[in-house]
Image (cartoon, rainbow, N blue to C red; front, side, top):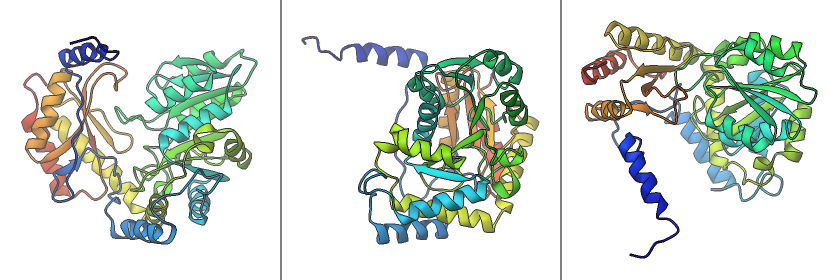
Length: 381
């Protein structure tokens, strides 16, 4: 066979296989599914009748797609309605809805920094933040995880724009960032603070208003938040929240907003439905945290190494990447879906199972989940 320009892909595939890092798509059917502790449906709203009805109504009214970028034809009255309600709920002056949480992080980081700027980025930040830093053309310093003093030392002395960026709740272990301490450092160093609240919205804060609400930072003039609509709100898409002048600046400069097709109306409608349901049923946030605590207590009582959750993510250590894959597969065979995190998704190189606490899980399902993980655990755990 003659050589082709893509022969190097076969070598890469062999290296992934040897390291136990092969990833495969596993399409879901629409019917009966295993007990779901793998998704990010923290409040159990993805299939809620009000959310699906809101999505269907929006599609019937506005069409199947947004039809263009939001600056052309893709911005509907429904988008503006969601932005107003989202900003008001989370305590910010304004909001901007984008096609994904990934796009939201890229938009904020590239539009608010640039050449000559300095970004202090937590070592545990999500890949979308990492990519946003790379695309920003700013100088980026990766600082030790959850270490405000390291952020202070990094920011001190820089003469251009300065910004510290962190997840509110880190997706690997479910631990929360020290937001109040980070805000104090940023203010002392005349820097902005950007927080990705993807895993905090709907779980933390008063009635699920998010980690920045819980830290008393929502709406502050030097704070910007990003979030996703695909977790607690049961929909899809992302948003940036902050001062009105920041949002106006993004509308005019953020490439992932300007040149991307607007979020589909059905997703906007579903997010609005989820947000209004959460506002009416704030107890869902507390229930999600209660479920996470119960999972952690059950897993540790079973002798497994589980990280104490600060929100709804419960992480269980695995002895190796291969063992994590087998463990997750055995859980699925036993009727339960769990997440499997391996390098390069984990910054410390330690593979894990990740369990998602959902507000709609019953006590019986929690007990079943703990027993399934315990029973299928590798012998070396």
